[in-house]
Image: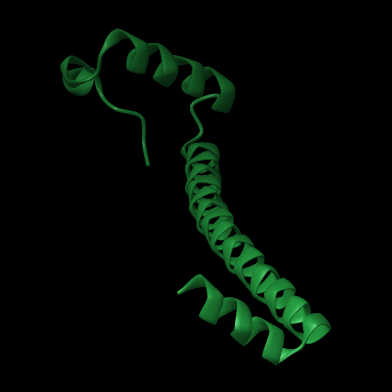
Length: 94
């Protein structure tokens, strides 16, 4: 990636031009350093997407875990009172 030419300047807004100037100053105009910064930014974006995926997956697993825990609590309650008592309560509820 090389720095944009003056001819390309009309395509950038003022903030983008200021950012390009800061980038040019930080890298002393070195295209190699710009390429390193660009690849680092790409890597950070990729990591951000992966973290977002993992956070969503974690939420899904947490919900599933809560559902399994609730089911286990119901099963535990059934074993404490016995299946006959549970069936009797179901019949009474009807």
